[in-house]
Image (cartoon, rainbow, N blue to C red):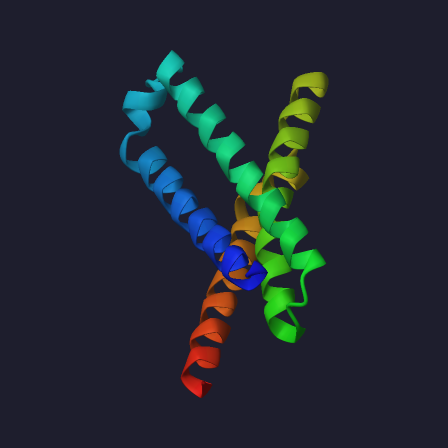
Length: 137
């Protein structure tokens, strides 16, 4: 039962993340305006962040508690850790930049380059291992 729940939450996390990112790229001007963010943009980003954080933390806890083994567990944990790292690095970048009045590059690079690559590697690795496991059955 927990294995099916993990995969349901995993697919929900991937789906919501893809929808969230694609809406930001396609509707960015509508959501955020050219220079002045709109209330709709704030609500969209906040609600999307809350949903993704809830799914990520739930998946992280379930993966750590269940008996998912070997490489699949590593890929699932990489997916969730990358997402959580993205959130933490983004928040730290903004806090440090706001407090020091200069752009802090380390957390920005972690949030925009390292964590999305880790998320993709973890998600694709998990999907490949799941498909491989189904074929062997």
